Amino acid sequence: MVTVLGDDVAAKLSVGRVALVGAAALALVSVGYNVWRDRPEKKEASAPFAPAAQQPSDPEAVIRGLQDRVGANPDDAEGWQMLGWAYFENGRHADAVRAYRRAVKLAPDNATFWSSLGEAVVMASERDPMPREAAEAFDRAVKIDPKEPRARYFQAVRKDLAQDHEGAIRDWLALLADTPPGAPWEADLRRTIEQVGKINGIDVKDRLAAVKPAAPHPSMGSPLGGSVATAAIPGPSREQMQAAAQLPKGQQDAMIEGMVSGLEAKLKANPANVDGWIMLMRSRMTLGETAKAQAALEAARKANPGQSARLRDEARVLGVPGA
Image 1 (cartoon, rainbow, N blue to C red):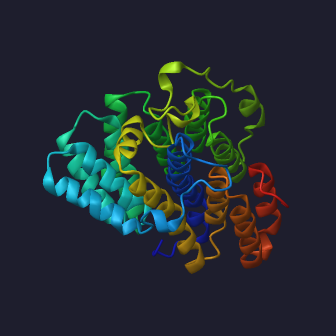
Image 2 (image 1 turned 120 degrees about the horizontal axis):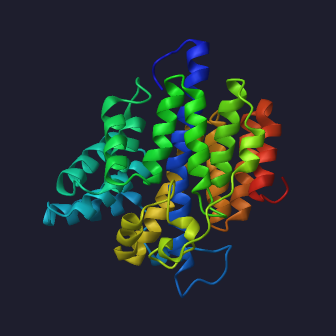
């Protein structure tokens, strides 16, 4: 964020901001893993992508392709959603907001589109951690679908930012109870609850232990054939996965690579972003790129020696070799 805040205010906002960034990063994990996993030609987990010579690797090519798609059909709500998603994952948050606004205008009853808009508005803001437009978008999403998990997640963040830490924790615990077993964001959601509790002196240990995850349900499976864990927040929505599946194979690959490489580039520019390094390690491990996850851990510890223990612990949870 550009604005310089007082230490006490910054401490209160930090967990909510980290939680928002984490949700965005986990979306790329689920997309990358599921698009790759369901390819019949995949060889082994350590090499999920075809050689660069066989496909485009420029994420801008994906964006141009989606721009052409909505240019040819301006009333394609799904196309605008995918364009917003591509912008978002490449750090072009203001452009993502504009694309998502078009999507919700064309499909005002789509809860996922509204929650995506809210997320993009938050990330595009340099001052307000929860702009009014974002809050209204999340409220609209929940009004359409009371179980919309992304919007529920961010509504809890809004409570935390408003100093209602107990309310935020209560809502996150409810979301955790609805989280399918083995969901890739489960650990992050638990960690967020623990962090907010620790910062604000709220004991959450017993409450976390008491949460029983929701049972898997066949109807929640990914349209690409993935597990129940890929069907909800903070991963991509059903609509997003369907749209990703419709992209040509090369564009799918380029989108996934663009997401991960974009995050890596941001970390080179800002190596002090410890949470970003954790996201990168998670992305590499989910895509089966263990050597790159290991390299990310080494780079992160070198850049942040004071956070070495935390990075090591996070890497161990993720299964990074040598952690």
